[in-house]
Length: 73
Image (cartoon, rainbow, N blue to C red; front, side, top):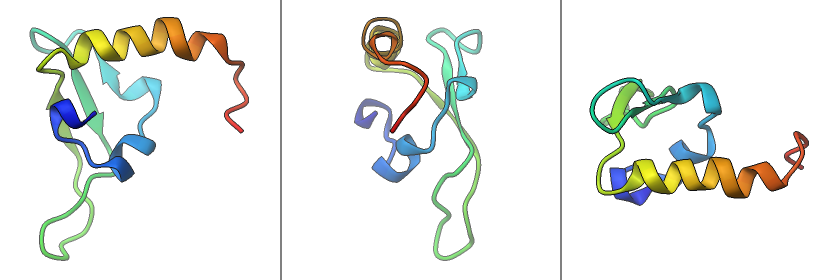
C-alpha cells in the first residue's frame, strides 16, 4: 500500500467494500479511517490505485486472501 501513499494504520482498517474498481482508470480505495492534519481528526479520502497497486491488490485478493477462510484471527 506504500505504492499509493497509505499509512500502515490506514491499510489495516481497509475492507473489501473499500475497493472501488469502477472508479478512475485503475480503481480507487476509499480510506474511511484516514489521518487528519494537525489534530483535526480522521478524514476520509479516495486514493487512486496507481504505480501498479491495482495489479498487486487484485493478486492479493484473488490468489492470497482466497487461501484463507473468513476467520481473520
